[in-house]
Length: 154
Image (cartoon, rainbow, N blue to C red):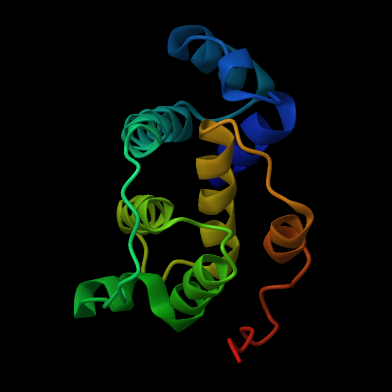
């Protein structure tokens, strides 16, 4: 599924340039993606678009601390939680965007979610909202290898 997400990001500069789901499924199939993966990716993207649309309509701000329940920690893992906290503390993710990233990561059938996949989720969220990652975020999304230790916040 993540190969499809990366392909969409690289192929379609903006989400509104993406064809309708039925036409997109045909294009993805013609490129060689598996039908099951295509279906999973389209459902995942549809859910992301629904959540991202809600996020854009809300203007609430939060200055509170986000506490993770055990299930979230088990699914996300320490590296992913640290990366999410880094992006939020740097002002690169809003609290509402953070919640969308967490929800989309929890929707996956894997635990812990790899840091590479979490980065793709963040990128797809920004893409679905028509936002371009700034240089700092782009470096963080693609500059570090997964084998490296997570960045410290201090």
